[in-house]
Length: 347
Image: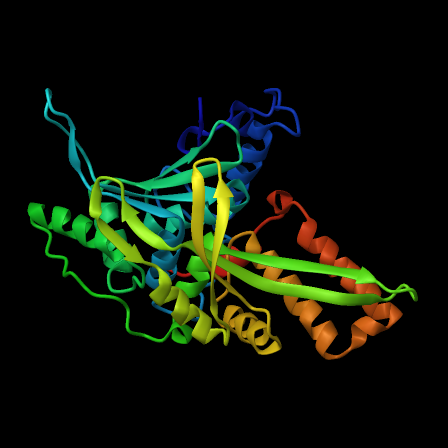
């Protein structure tokens, strides 16, 4: 059975005499995250709560929660529009939005759940990933209003179907088009990178035991087409928004093919290979930061880039710093408290 965060209230949280689970067990990890959430002023039963000493810090980028969540949902989200589940019983399955996440981002999704004042966190049996499901009507409508007008990909087709479904029951949500605001002025890309962005770093030592061949970049990939299994007429290319990302980063879109057990998968890829591209993406993320586990990679890559630009990496002290930052990027962030979430966007 999966682990359900909304029910993850271990006996020893309220009863110190109760035996704790093994340190390396999934229950131990989830309970640690649960306790951190309570310490930071969260009540996972969805009731707003702050401790006496809690002083939430609001990110200065006001109004960016919607664009950020839009990017996150367009990357790793699924929009399900209500339908008849069983023709004999005429049972209606309600609409919902679901976002998949790596378990290393659990703290971020607890924060998102808190900001939305609802949702259901479900951890998969393998303990490696989870899903946040927004199904309750008032919370779903609030989320739709937040992201409406901030979509940039063909997935807007699903959002519009959801809005039309919600509007059948007295809601009056407009069908807004793709966001015309330049990417550089929006947190959309940072949300999208939480889902579909990856940081790469590699280097080696020369005969003098100093670093050479330092290679680092951001890698963004997307399937080439947006499709609906239940409607073959929906088949749109992802090239346009990937090209917009490439232009922002002074890069280009590459078309690749990857072998899968189910066949050949066609992807569009953008990489920050050039020096200018690296500077642009790191500066962008300083303005519109990542909040998940990839934020630690960004912070350490920023330090590595500073070493390279100052040529400090060619000296012994610089090499020691490079090794430290590289090691930091390999750390298991599940045991690190995400204190930067104090600056997460507010609703």
